[in-house]
Amino acid sequence: MTEIFFVLTVIYAAYVIYSVVNDSKKAKAIDDSAPALMSVVNVTVKPLIPEKVMAKPLVKPITKTVKPAAIKAAGLKNPETGEIATSYANYRFMKRWIKEALVAESLLEKIYKNNELNAEIEARIKEAVARLESVARYQI
Image (cartoon, rainbow, N blue to C red; front, side, top):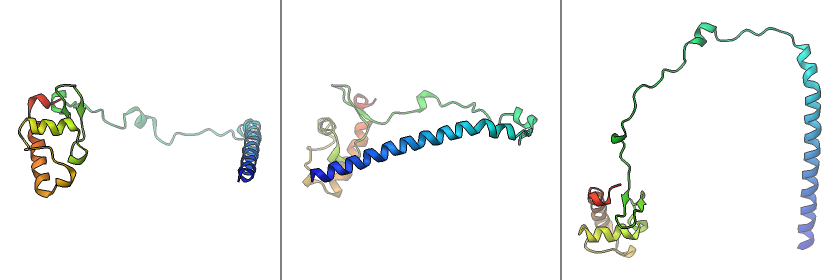
């Protein structure tokens, strides 16, 4: 097995060296022929877009700005540590402090285990999280 790995490594190294040498030869050939090609072509070029059209801006500048008060950051803030949680849509992956806050604010009866979740409980959890977002202590 070691011999096969060694042979494959040698083949790969040879390929890399071969490709580097060939790329440098191609680059040198292109650099040498570029001035000769440029001297053959001596044609004046007209712009495709007239100059009076080019003087006007193609895109209107945006004058409206969004007020910073209109942008509301999504997330919950842990009042004890200052940690901000932005993804808490799924109860199974929700941070422990959010689950404890739901119980502390008496929005839920208890912290549910994953095997206790069903459609009815998940609906209650979503409603409780929506109410927790409106509590001032947990807002960002």
